[in-house]
Image 1 (tube, rainbow, N blue to C red):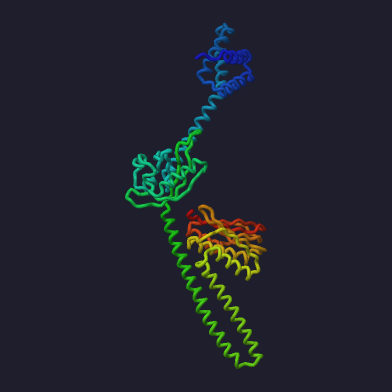
Image 2: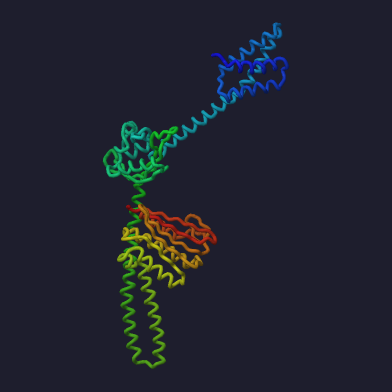
Length: 433
């Protein structure tokens, strides 16, 4: 290796100055030379050759043997100072390498001990990494899986979805999350929620990294919630029927009986009886309202927008609160979705009427390709928003009920509020396009 002559000359000048003066300033120059060499990618072998060539030139200026020994020792100190940046860099590299190794070990332990499937595939969907959870949830060994393609364990009807999600990621969607079913080695199906993102090395996309979660328990819970809500709706329908029909018949009988009594009364007594009849009319009106709100027949007959309009009119009349309804929904939604969203709006309107101090409320229902959106916004006092908390700061049973209603149909709810900022409740339910 032949070092750059200008480098030998520059280094030699600094070394010569130090050997002649033995001062700290020249030693500092050695350190700076070392930093410069490191910054320019000089290797230790190259700099060692530079040092020896520069030292050979310096020794010719010190012919006496005693001087040469002193020069060699002093040059050693200069060279060590020069190598200090290299040593510091090497030490930093070792520490970084050790930290990286520890981080990799932690990551490996986390992946191996995760209860969810952690996997990576190449762009052809062949497995290149798999953890122990995959063995438990698929029934295949790691050795078997690493020889398989992802599509081999995905249910046939969901394979196109996997291809579509890869296409979306390549088009720029950073992470995709979706549900599918895999086929266990023994033949039964396991529902999974899968979240994936691209593996990129440099500028090249080399594969897909993902996490898949067993959602069998979630599906069972969701089914139980659906059954519970259906049972509650049936009970509400029965009570509404009794309120409307049986109570109505009894009140009609009372009216007839009062008409008979009124014929034999004096005018003053008839006036008192008329007051009683007015109270009975109010009771009948309240019972009719309760019957409709318990289970509005208009929801079953005409669908969600009409039922919301009817509900809004009733709440507005009782509370003297202006309520507007906007909807672009055409046709009918799944019955479970209609009921869930109706109950969410009902609870939100009751809260707005009782607690918000609002001057107006707006209800909006819309639908895009894959989601139904429903919002209830008021311009009231708002409140300090905390997860699961009501306006009084304690857990809100109404919010819990809304979340459970939506969870049963795969939906979510969000609240945007703050003191003096009003309140907006947003419900979203996924649906087929």
